[in-house]
Amino acid sequence: MVTEQLTDSAYYILLSLLVPRHGYAIMKYVEELTEGEVTIGPATLYTLIKKMVAADYITAGDIEDDRRKPYCVTEKGKQIIDNDMERRSRMARHGINAIQQAKEVSDHEKK
Image (cartoon, rainbow, N blue to C red; front, side, top):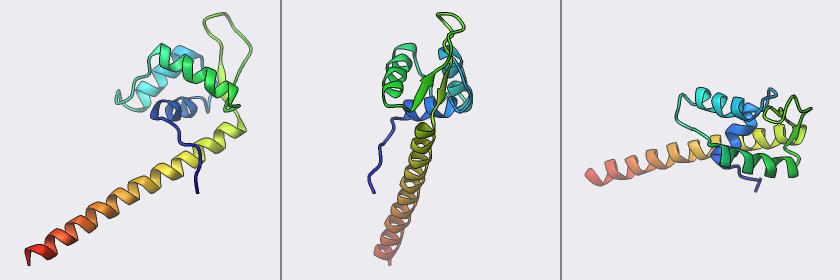
């Protein structure tokens, strides 16, 4: 099954928009959620927001002011998140299985 694969930045932006947020709040939320492991700069953020609005993954809410336009994930965006979480879980399982198989081969060769 082939589904759209999100970049890490796009994945975290969509997660942040499960609750309406403006740009700066998105960046702060991602940094807090990932305990500083992922940071998204303004150029990346607004490039991805533009693409995700065009793809109907998110919508722009009413403008509070020019600098605080809130965005929110759409139903299509929620489905993309679900699909990507499942894909990432499969990838983690594949990694665990590959490491276990490599260990078994290594242990067998030592005998």
